[in-house]
Image 1 (cartoon, one colour):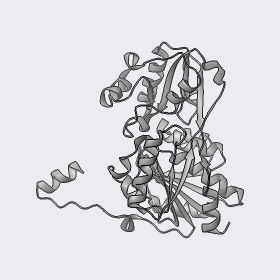
Image 2: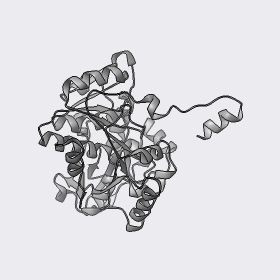
Image 3: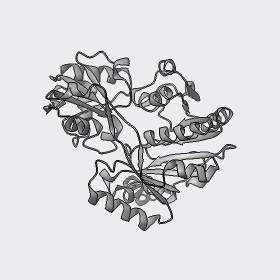
Length: 347
């Protein structure tokens, strides 16, 4: 919006298209999952929604916000049903982070650049279309139920970032995620802001507890924490699930990788100096993936604790063990997401 102010001051016209002008209408019920900021927890909320719908015998087509890199003519309509499809479409780490967990659950994910074509393909497959947003844009499809995820670790951002505030004001249901790791004051501030701008929304509190493979192996070890890249960069977080999990399970030390960063990873640290002693899992192309691999191999640590949703061993060759942090959404109290879906769609 600072750029917009500059454009207006120069005398040019500037217009933002509203959701009514940009949302496509589906023949199937649409549930949209958007967020206030990147890294709030859209993905685990989407997985929870698909889990509930499948419990009631419903087929779900997941449609993901685009992350198009490379030749866009090959990305008109992409369908991800098996892990081999990730290689077929030459996915970046950022794309794999969004698709791989769904595939492992048995979900089919659509993405690409032509969302009219994508919608019609998704309608053929599912009883429901689930829109999973990215970069906090408004939904590309007109939702029958709008769910927005808010992050108390960044309380206040819900009113100061675009288009997260738009999502907040339009939502039917607001999930306050990460209440298990956020402070009481931050949760209270977030609740007050929600009530002020969208008092009619149903508010659900949820946790994102950690699940670690071989967590005992991490005690008293020097740990390199690898975090989801976009959450740290344009999401502006200075830590993530890997740091929190490492501290919770008794890591001896968090090793700072910045002195060992290679190529584009070094440039990332320079561009986003707010990140702490951790490594964002950046992988926008083969060169950056190689730089990430080299940075991990150069960093003097005992183990790597990775909170990126994918198995890094599938795409990297590293010289130390990787322990993966998984996190799923768990609603606290009532109503739950299942309560909302049952009432809205007569499940």
